[in-house]
Amino acid sequence: MIIEQRIQSRNDVKAIYCRLTGDYSKVDYSSAWGKLVNYCAEKNVLTDCEDAEYMNQYLDNPSTTPAEACRVDVCISASVVKNLEPSDEVGIRTIEGGKFIVFKVKGPYEQFADVYPLIYGKLLADAGVKVLNKPTFEKYLNDPESTPAEELLSEIWIPVE
Image (tube, rainbow, N blue to C red; front, side):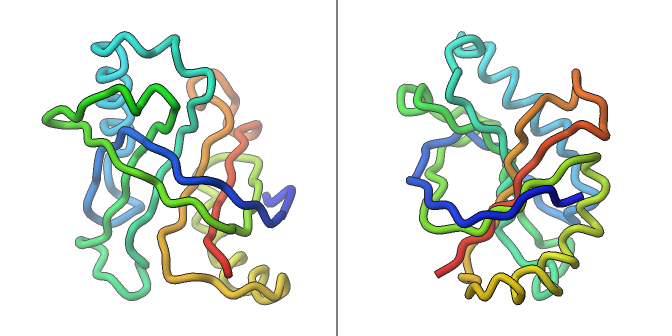
């Protein structure tokens, strides 16, 4: 359920990431998150990330890109990333800032299959914004390991003019 909508600007951020390719509803997000957590543990930065943001950035539009070619970067951004080096499984990249319309969502991640059509089919037009042809991302505000699914908080960030 969408509980808030706002316009917000943000700066570029550095992030560690694992790229997944394939149908967004079928790729193994848990495996990618595990690789990022293991990387942070190896680099001794698990407790040094008070400013960490956990997100998935969707690089392709599944309406125009074949499902098997869709790419998503599973990311953790934090100020400590500037001191890290990439590994075989974990890269480092910049997530572009700018102006976004942000939809805050409460509840299980599975509901996103219904939330996205509502956003793109109605809410963006109602907001009167022009969407840019740039990647969107989901930002996860609490831990799915310790939070009941109905209490999960996420934000969908869509770049706009």
